[in-house]
Image 1: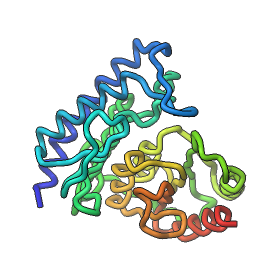
Image 2: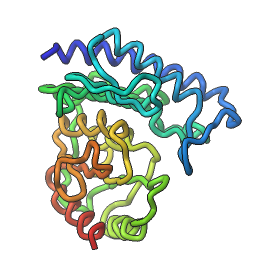
Image 3: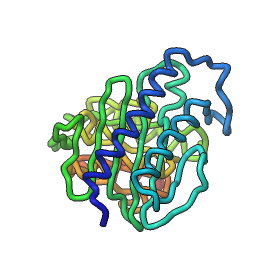
Image 4: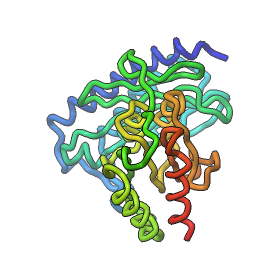
Length: 265
């Protein structure tokens, strides 16, 4: 296997370059530049250009790698090593001037994620990990919380931009956590939510209708920070199954049970 620590450190440089571009564009961004990919699914030249920066830099690090990217600026192809990229997770926040957005990158080796980076440019916070490492925030080790009861926990979730067929079931889950935890937060960026679980800011996170590029980097960092990651039914299809639950190990079973029971009723 390639030297993942070295690859991660080089990739962080590229991710920060893309993040710097995004932050600079936010200062002068005009909503007239917004385009529509689908219902409530927004994109702009910022997403596309940031992705091109990432692809170029990551290709130089691993010339033989393939890519799975949100904006499709390069032919989508999987090889032994495949970069999974969301150049701007939280595009709607970015467009409206809200500060919760970031760059998410995961590296997949065959069928396993082996490296993850999430960068939040507004706070200049870079979360990262590689296979065999701890999880880090700006070179300082991080870990998930140690809270053992939901009443001590702060949860995070997201709302789907489309696919609303089971929204009532989903809102029942939200209601349960509102009533039985310290609160539920919806920041608008799954990648940032996941990074915050890894850093102990949230105790858990769940969402559906997500894509692989939304979760690849952040979920891996959660795992390396000591958290658990599954789909809603406690399976391992969280990368492509469009459902994810992450939490510290003490509350995970309870969180998963609440989500699964309400989702499948």
